[in-house]
Length: 85
Image 1: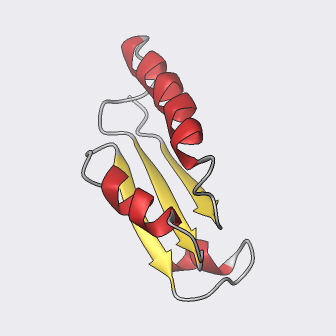
Image 2: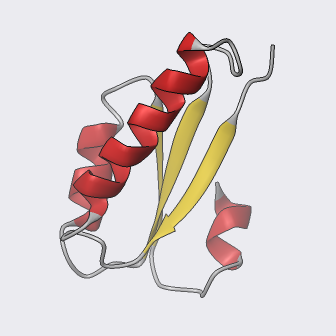
Image 3: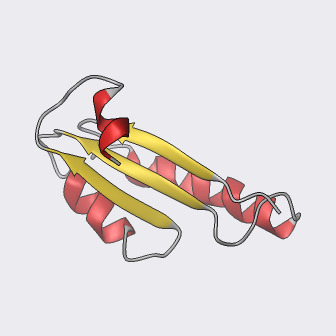
């Protein structure tokens, strides 16, 4: 079975992060229930130097095994943070 991992760079996403995670979680749970992906699939959220509560929210999400967390000290655009995961 396929183990899926998505990587989402996050920059100042405090206002929308919970909603985005809810939508992705529904999708992941449906794909798991339908046997498309394995139960050990995960979502990786990379804080890209946010100045709001984005990193705090990502750390809270990390308490759930489906979510992984990473952070960067500064924003590097869309490519650099993915290399740091």
